[in-house]
Image (cartoon, rainbow, N blue to C red; front, side):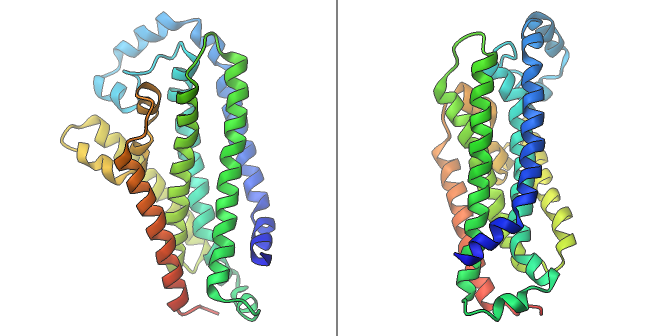
Length: 266
């Protein structure tokens, strides 16, 4: 419990900065909806000019920007999913490795705590901030939906586009947590975390554009919670949920095993 509380305090500032930036950007995007929805035909004509591959990649061929749900799926959802995933992976990858990088691991190991308790305390901190992040964003989104809606929207779709980013963030935080087993230098976390998230997103784009690369969708979590599928079909495929569960479970389990066996740099 002490390790958990210690980590909450150490990571509080970063959390506040990230949530303020994303919540502010989210609010700004919603503010554009009334004017854009009034120009629905012009937007449709503009979309018709785009290549089919581009429309497919960004869900422009399935979602209607004149509706609050379609607008959110095209404009806001991506940034919450993408930037939130970067935050989640930075948090997961840095929470263990920074002990060795900052030279505080010697103090931590001198206390009467096992390595399992260290991993558990830090993992719980990551889980707490990921859940809090998504609770705040979902609450804010619900308020914005109610303020700016022009017609009724599907509550089921809203729940799914709220759960989707949460699953994505949990996946990347778990992967980041696992990667932290092999990182000693804190500065190395940033290019690795950002590169991994952006790489996964680019793979999802490629899998949407090219039929030959469609199989790549199974290796990028961004395709598991694609906004257009969540909104139109109102479901998350069982196979995607199974993969997410496996990746999270395997990453955390492997982290416990490796951390108990690794040579700690003091």
